[in-house]
Amino acid sequence: MLRSLFPWAIIFLMQLPPSFQENCTYETSWIDKEMIVTCENITSLDFFKEDITFNNSVSEIVCLDCNLVYLTDNIFPVSITILRLANCNISQISNSVFTDLALLEELILTSNHINLFPEIFKKLMSLRTLHLAHNHLHSLEYNYFTGLDQLEYLFLEGNNLSSIDAEPFRILKSLKYLYLDENNIAELDKNAFRGLTELTILSLSHNEIVTLSGETFNDLTLLESLYLDNNYLLSLPRELFYNQASLTYLDLSGNDLQLDETLFEGLNNLLVLYLKNNSISHLKNGTFQYVPSLTLLDLDENLIKSIDSCAFQNLTHLRRLHLENNFVEYINEDTFSDLVKLEILYLQNNSLDCLHNNTFAGLDSLEELHLENNNITYGEPVICKNESSNENIDIQLKQDLFGIEDMKKVLLEDENIVTENADGDALSECGNK
Image (cartoon, rainbow, N blue to C red):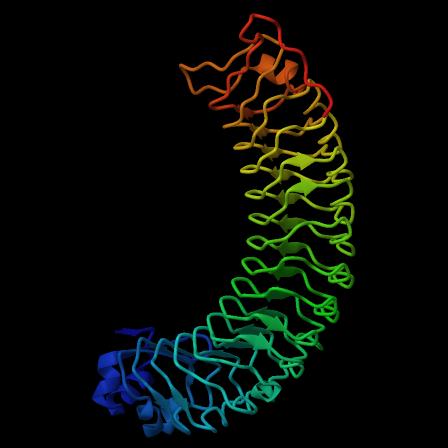
């Protein structure tokens, strides 16, 4: 199929081998006359050698589901800026296959069988994006990346890396995004990320990391997003985030962490904190004192049974709080008093049996309150859930029980708010616990 074809391009098409015409298409930009070549199910790229004039016009090569196996020397046009060879069964690469590609800006080698060797990319002085995800990489050496002074994006997820030694990325002074997800990384040298002073996103999720040195992220002063979810972390050193004043997003979900009051020291600008599915059993006073800018806090699926009255103190910017799927039995009257901007509060699937009159007082921004699947009883007022409809709890319940006039939704499925016990005596308000 030919799209946006110039007459002179048709002449070159007639000169190309039949395999090109059958399995490849190309389109031409009307602005700069550069060509994008797309091939499927081919076994060789040698036809690019057959017409130098044609080659000088090619800016992008895309091979989809090909069977190339071996990349030989001098097969790519020197004019290309983007080379995509995903899922092409590549297992061997010539030492000098990329030697003449000084203009290349993006190289995608995802889902092949590639192992790297020193200085393979050393001539790619313009390269900004390198995809090596889902290959057979077992280790990283600093000289693998020699010459990549302009590299900003490096994708290494889904390989067989078991450790990151000291300074494998030290040459990559311009690197901003580093993805190491879905490997088998169990050990990180304390200098693994040394020199990455421009890094803004680091993903280490879905690995086997048990411990981290307090110096691991020392050089990452511009880091904005850090993904450490789904590892085996038991604890984190107090000084781990001392230099991460720029961090706004932190995911620690799916580990085995307990929380310490000093854990988040240095994270004054953190906006989003995921702590879902850990081993947190108690939220102490001051736990979140160093993250006053939080807008989202997720503590879903932990073992939380008790919450100190000042656990959420000073979280005046928090808009969404997840406490569902825990074992919370009791909430102090002033636990949420500082959460003046809270919009959604998730407390479903806990063990609550009692609520204070003022538990939610002052939460004037609250729009949704989820209390499903608890065992809440309350002495007054006399208001029960309407079992015959799915309508929201009426406004009187919102005002009298929760002290909130403008709340849009209160969910209390499977609750039975009562005013009398089995003997017909009025239930009293919650006492202090």
